[in-house]
Image 1 (cartoon, rainbow, N blue to C red):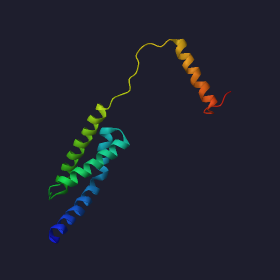
Image 2 (cartoon, helix red, strand yellow):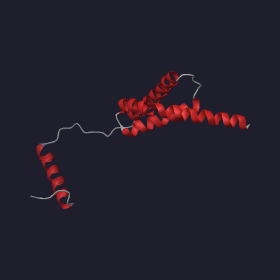
Image 3 (cartoon, rainbow, N blue to C red):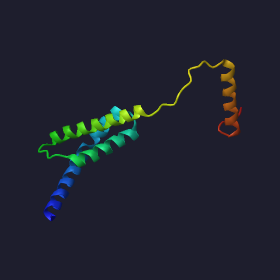
Image 4 (tube, rainbow, N blue to C red):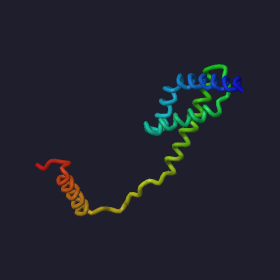
Length: 121
């Protein structure tokens, strides 16, 4: 049993070392796909989790990197789909009269002045 545990621990250490060597490349690619630091971190974290669970043995670093990149792209695309399914706020496309716009704008300015967010002239 300890032989199996030691082998698993060795594989885990090797996987972590290989993943760290690819980390900056993964972040760069995820940031290009997702355009968000928060989603980039999430994609790279999901990639690490998925890859660490299903990592096959690779003899060369290039094969591992290619496989890891495929895992990252799958995770990034899943996040893009998730983002697209999130309901977007509804925007009214009805025309607004100049008077209504001016009244709302003045109300916002007065509110900011009373809340000391801007200084009156």
